[in-house]
Image (tube, helix red, strand yellow):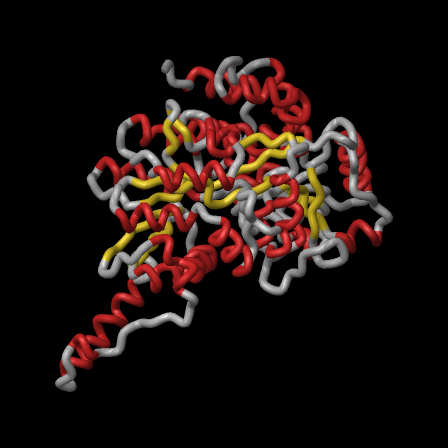
Length: 443
């Protein structure tokens, strides 16, 4: 069911009532907005048009998107119909191949966007969108939605994945300090385990995308151990997936996530994380049954209602440390908009989503991070969102996009995710890495 169906039903009902009462339909009550429509004048007027949008955001996240573009829709006359699907990655392919493509899709994986671009399904960005992209984002960010020199979309959402969530009170009561280096993090992990509390909690269940939290861990550690050069070559398959340096990173992660002394706090043995949803994985921090949870900035919106975020609140986060205190490698991800249709109203909607106005308006609605240069950190809903935006806008940050999202979809959203689940379940590192390497497309 598409979001916005209730609004459509309301319009139909009003028209029916008006007709029943002998009132001409053009005299029936119409929706109106109190927004300053002057700010949307650049997008033109498109009365009676509709733009269908398909993405993975559901429930509250979807509601916040709809609330953000509501004034735009009212002022331009575009009926934006959004549909959220937790199995977006699998079903978008079925829909497109079945001739039921949406006008606009929110792609969480550049690799999947690239596939549709190469198949000729996506429409190249308009000149207006290209100009907004250059103004709003770095060349690296725009490169993620560029295929063979042509821009097909723009970033919508950004996130910093290299965060470790924790309870400031738990740390304070036990005299624990936030680690500045990887060796300090491992010493902290052992100290907490020795106290009788499992230091780490995790959950990797995510419907069709089950396994991705583990792949994030592996990518984060590889980036810290080997640097951006090796990371980039691995993602591009210029070195094999089972390269010894990748094996080392996997084994390092395994020393934490596959260790029953260290995981899975609040849930059970380490392998219990395979059945724990990523949404609930960090909750044992609130009860003191777990000390740390490595998860992205977007987890700010997944804590139970009433949870306060901040350095002296219920939960906060620190950047997963590197080899030295000055190292600041940041793994991140994002969602990109791209269009399967080329109509004036579709182009107008895309350009609005690419504006700093949209980014700041969405940030004021609730937890949200944007890499747009025009995003004002002061509008961030949480301290962690603010920190994320500052990191993304800092030219000194060594940012790299989630590797699995850049790999061919059959690997990044296929064998890598599945292999991660098998690995947590007991399969050996070399066995899993070699299996993924053999699955890599020949092209």
